[in-house]
Image (cartoon, rainbow, N blue to C red; front, side, top):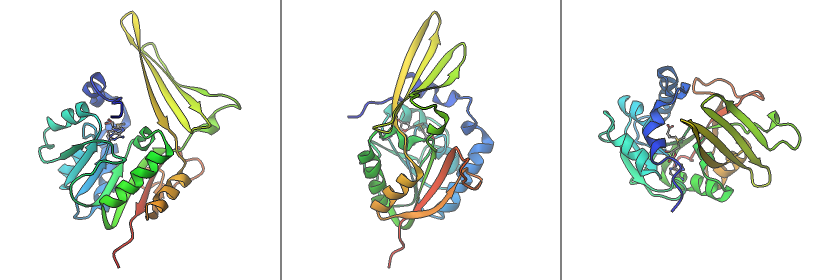
Length: 245
Ligand SMILES: C[S@@+](CC[C@H](N)C(=O)[O-])C[C@H]1O[C@@H](n2cnc3c(N)ncnc32)[C@H](O)[C@@H]1O
């Protein structure tokens, strides 16, 4: 069984984040984008977490099912008003099977990076393709690897330095690995949390989609369909499974 990096206190405090992704404006754009692609069909969220996206999407009338590794995250979702009929399959979204087929599957908030090998990321695309109806869509929102911000030979990149939180990423350029290290102040002590990720390029994701029988449909730099350019720091990509003959 895979290690759960979102259990315990992480799950309990996940929704307290002061992050624009939890704000109403951001969620309006994100859920509107997803609802447009979903049409009338049910949708599948990989790594559904506490339902940051799934609950407002359900409130728009979209039927949602999730796959989630962390039972603690899923428990937070289950007690939320509006989550009563959101089903959750506990398992690894690279391999776990959810009931039925879907018009849309989505994997947001950099969560593809939680799969730390290329094989697992490819397996995830194949698993999604098996869950999609013909003509269905797969959406990923993930950062563009920020290696250009690094100096030659630099493998450590600090991303936050405050009185209560020190954070830095550690890169492994051979394996495309990136471990995020967090140190949180707890009174006189510091608590450490380190999470491994695998960064992945947009073109590599397109190839994974191709291996799974899908092709690129759209690529934007945000949920309001901003153009994707050389300066974009994130992308929202949509791949499509072929229509039935
Ligand atoms: C950054 S959170 C995103 C949660 C939610 N999608 C959101 O946008 O707020 C990542 C979630 O993916 C889950 N997760 C990570 N790796 C997973 C895997 N291999 N299979 C299933 N869930 C996974 C984590 O437990 C966590 O709930």
